[in-house]
Image (cartoon, rainbow, N blue to C red; front, side, top):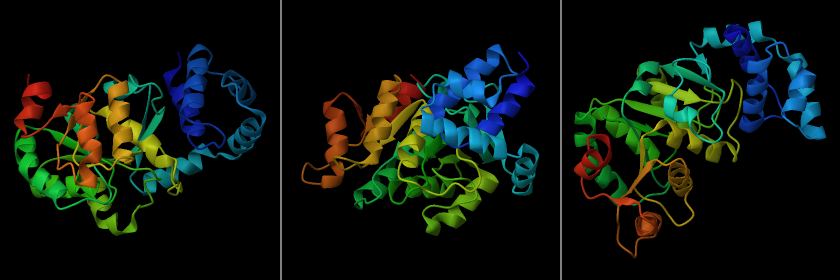
Length: 290
């Protein structure tokens, strides 16, 4: 296996249209057997429908890898592939791992005990209070928090972790040159400069609705467990929790008042078997330091 040549292919595939994570994994599997496959052969192995195949072949021909690499270098953005020794081991185990991750910051943070902490974009005062109660002990015990830099609980997780002198990882649903929402640009820059900022999307990719459920699988996938702080009945946070459950990861949930709509999702998770969390010790003793 010519690892360097396959990784060149992977970088190129990351900038092509018409293919998603599952198609990319199929292509990489084919390249491991034969690293000299053409774009047409890759489209065949991925079993692309006609419309996707056309978009893929057209974009593949237009990709200029060397020019793109210069753009990333100018913005101090790096990348690792599924074949890289630094690629997160837990993420490899999920159903559809991203074949390439773009990042800014300290990649070594991925080697720590990672806890995904997620919650509603619209939250009550209860959510931040819970974070103030749990995060000091979690940070003190070396837990690195992982979240999605969204409004509400996600943003509070990153901010409060930093204020406590802890480490945090933000996984976003755009290219690393975009900030969504825009008001988090300062926080995103700080995380990229001093913590770790990750995306599977290349430069120039704007926020699209389907990017965020896809982003959630990475949040759950890199983490040993997922804590849901507040979640409405149809919250995206529940998608992250369900993804964690599907991958056999521990799911923790904060109970709340049954009249509080922001606790409806977490209470439901507890009824379905998620670990009820009343203190940081319920996380530390149950999973990370059992």
